[in-house]
Image (cartoon, one colour):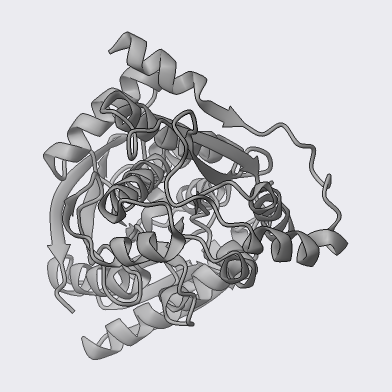
Length: 398
């Protein structure tokens, strides 16, 4: 196994291009050129199967970005140790999206400009995915993504496939758990004002309405906000007995958590997956103790997740989170589809992804629908003195 690990690691290439190296004015030309380049149906005898990955290696999400890269590296190790894809080793090329939409556009342009990549691991940020979606369509190669805005798979983006459940499901789980299990009726909903947060809060409000619950406060915030004191005071004044949060960045959520506790707010708290992220837990510490999360990855949710988490911690000396889990599953889904297609031809791989049923990943069992959504359920977890404890999994059939 050590030899396999070393060999796989040597085949991981993190591109060292400098931010801004490709001027934005060249973007259209690059994408037009690369979309016209066809990768051979099956790589030659000495070829590797090349896959591109975007990740935030700089900016506020840099620590999480490294975790995403490590999840993909771990999957590449597993695939290569088992003989690769179509008999060829996987080679991973990573570009920094700088934790911003413009950086994401440039990162995807650099990857696409290579012309020899058979597919991509994109991003978990919905707003960034909306920014690159037109370019993904032009390149016309399978792109695995993890943004949870439900609209990402309902706008005709035929080359984007989601390996996380959308917020269409998280909202239903949060609303039911808060009203039925916790018996709370007065909701304060705090959300980012980007595509992820705006979509999520609208979906949650609809889910609560169907259960006869009405939010007493719905308040947005801008990413990288320096002070959440006005937001916390608004929660106190609202009389809310339960808080639901949709935060994009871990540092924002950690700051909010600390200020919430400092100002004495003790209402029940249910968060979107960011509340379970490794970086969030490090930054917020005991301010998150006793909170609940609705998340697609929980280490004890299934045997695949447990094995993945143990191996990740062995390799990288920290616990994995959603960021590592979706890139791990995403690369395995793409590799499986290429093997099933018997080809790297984009249309054949696309059809193979959509045909996946019963694929057991670390985030759950995949069954892709016609829109490109692979997962349809969430886990409920609780933060018990800093440990994320699995409570239950809720699966949907619609």
